[in-house]
Amino acid sequence: MLEVKNLAVSYGAVKAIHGVSLEVHDGEVVSLIGANGAGKTTILRTISGLKKADDGEIRFDGTDLRKMDPSKIITLKLAHVPEGRHIFPQMTVEENLEMGAFTDRKDMEANMEEVFGRFGRLKERKKQLAGTLSGGEQQMLAVGRALMAKPKMILMDEPSMGLSPLLVKEIFSIIKEVNRKGITVLLVEQNAKMALSISSRAYVMETGKITISGNAGELLRDDRVKKAYLGQ
Amino acid sequence: MERRVKISYVINFLGVLAVFLLFVLLFESRVFGAATQYIKGICTTACYTIIMVASLNLVVGCMGEFSLGHAGFVSVGAYASAIVSGALTGKGLPDLALFLIALLAGGIAAGITGVMVGIPALRLRGDYLAIVTVAFAEIIRVCFCNFSITGGGKTMSGILKLSDFYWCYWVMAACVAVMYLYIRSKFGRTVKAIREDYIAAAAAGINVTYYKVLTFTVAAFFAGVGGGVYAHYMTAMIPTNFNFMYSAELLSEVIIGGIGSLTGSIIGAAFLSSLPEMMRQFSQYRMLAYSVVLIIVMIFKPGGIFGSWEFSLTRLLRRAEKKEHEKAEGGVKPWKQL
Image (cartoon, rainbow over all chains, first blue to last red; front, top):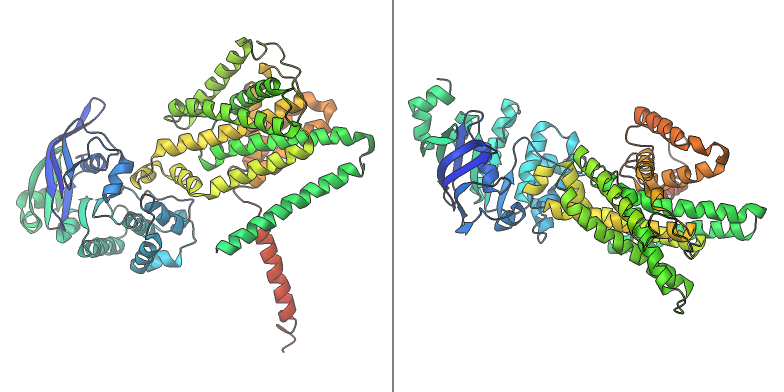
């Protein structure tokens, strides 16, 4: 479904990604784990067009994404939940969700009902300003907003960041549920254990390169991963 | 829903009409005696200031970017409309048509300038954008100082006196209504989303630059219309009228009234534009007074006097109706039952 080949990205003179290749198949949850500054977020931003690549190839269902604007990429049904809960704080929950349906307004009402069905808390707070929600609710709103675009695939950037352990669990169960409904997920996480436990496959990144990749279950047992990311 | 919207349009129109009739009554009954003409003039000043300030509020309030060059767009509108009305005089057009055509021309000219300034400038944000808008306004001013068609730095005079208060009132009402609808529309909501979170807006599929330039252009258009009214009221103008101080004055009126509140812009502009007229003898201290008011507002009410609150006639009526309702059936309620 998504295919990235020899991707190279830089910020000015600093090369952030050196030749990364990865692929995500239809219906999978694939996670991208690694330490701070490894380039995980950069990869997601490059896929969704927010950052331009220097070299390489990005294909989504066969369409080349590299020369596309972010506002066009989302019309291909590839949604991005940016890192750190980027919601619209001075707009109501409802308006936030409406913005998610920006590129495709037909069926908006029905989609919103579906999102509200999944996130009861958001429905209760429909008319509330999004900035007044708690951290977990804001993250749910960010996910809900991405779902409003009726995506085939979601790129999720550190959904568990800054959340309490209980909420982390809830967010991950939401991701699993989203996936069960047929949406492919590419997940970037620092919380390697949780990420691996819900993924089918995973890539481990280190300073702009993919160092290990494979089946999530195998990676959980891999000594190098255990040592570096699982604290064992 | 559809019906409710229609009813609210009618109610708001009636509200605007009622205010208009109040003014007509005041002026026609000559309550002010010999000062009537003078007060009418002040009200006209208030009308065009309201248009300019409200349009600046689109940029500052709705889009969340500081523009310090609004006087530039005002001057483009003022000169363009003056030139057009000058060229069309004696062609047998009725005055009102001439006035409206001139205003439209002023608005369009300013709108085009808005696109030209907006495309390069809106790539910047925050302080940098503010600096660039100052620069553009200065460029426009210097151009007008050198073009022979605008009087070449001398006073451009002999512009028709078309800005009658009664007409200006309706022009103002129409401009504010369109701006209000713009803010409430899909476009306005999109621009607000960009203001709130640039990255999330881009990730939601919004073409950020397009919507920013669009809003900037709409604001410039209305600034130009305001400038047109100004030109046909003053009948003479000089490019130095539209200097940095004029932009700063408009911006301070937006901030004092309330960033993001058209109600605030209307009341702030009406009040602050008529205040110096009322205290003519202290007029040289006007900017000083502005600064003091601005500082006080910033300390005690950082979002402006009205914040982002909007006056709503329909809401007011609904509330009044509710109260009536409660009174009607609530007479026996709380303690009489005991």
